[in-house]
Length: 115
Image (tube, rainbow, N blue to C red; front, side, top):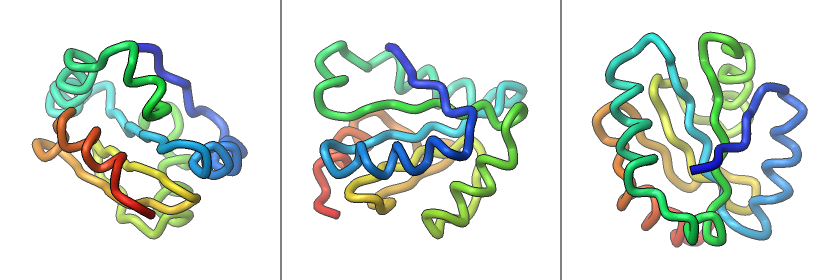
């Protein structure tokens, strides 16, 4: 799986723009948390190259970029969690999950939810 690295708050405008073409997956990961590592592994283990045509994945290292996580929460009106996935479509968050609720199949199904 090839992640786009989210490391600048200015990228949120680009993510919003892309989300009008196809859904965007934001994965907020705490590198020191075993639950976060497990959730990340669940996504990566099932991800197939063809999924890149359906959804564009972005990875945020929370420990290095916590202010961006706070901006994501404010920008999309979603309470911060860690780990957390958000699906962005048409500039809006249409799905979010955290901790043990993060599953590949649910994430992919949520990408099909109309905004």
